[in-house]
Image (cartoon, rainbow, N blue to C red; front, side):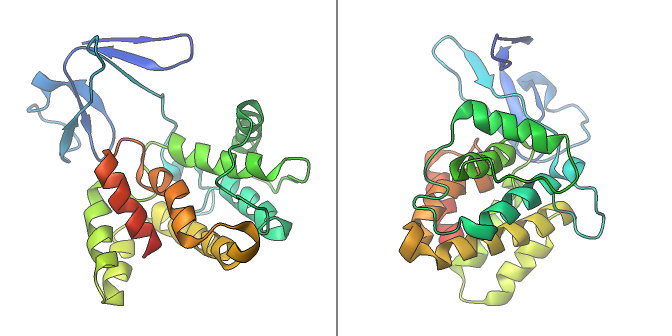
Length: 230
């Protein structure tokens, strides 16, 4: 297996590659039977026509960005949510309208380097929401890790409320705290849907790929959207 990097920082992998659904580690298909630290289900990556696979270099785990052991929520997300909740929940198309790429990356870099409260008044609403989505896509494991997605889907498909609570309790502490925090914020967005035009369905379509990760197949993403709407 040959791994190189293109000019945009994307990893280019040439050969037969498998990726772990849990930890996202990639390795040659002939090596998956060897003893590995992670034994989660393996998914073969999709190939392009020239048998080269490209994927964006991912950041660290969610835990790496949590400094408070009692409330394990990345300060980056707290800064963004505070700014949005303050006076931007009525913004039409919030989370749907994309931010300018350079501004999103500028804010992402600034917030990653700070654990303090940062004033985001100078940034556009779409830049802040773009930063949230970019961060959640960058982390190594999505808010709802692939190995627990079926639990969440079945829980939301059930009429028993305790099943969704059980699914949440299965999450690692950083994911559990962050998921509850972000869903509280997203619920406030939907509460203002008469002004921002972001109904529960619209918001789910914008956020489901972010919440469950970018490697999901199309039909699974659609199920994920239904899960978020539940």
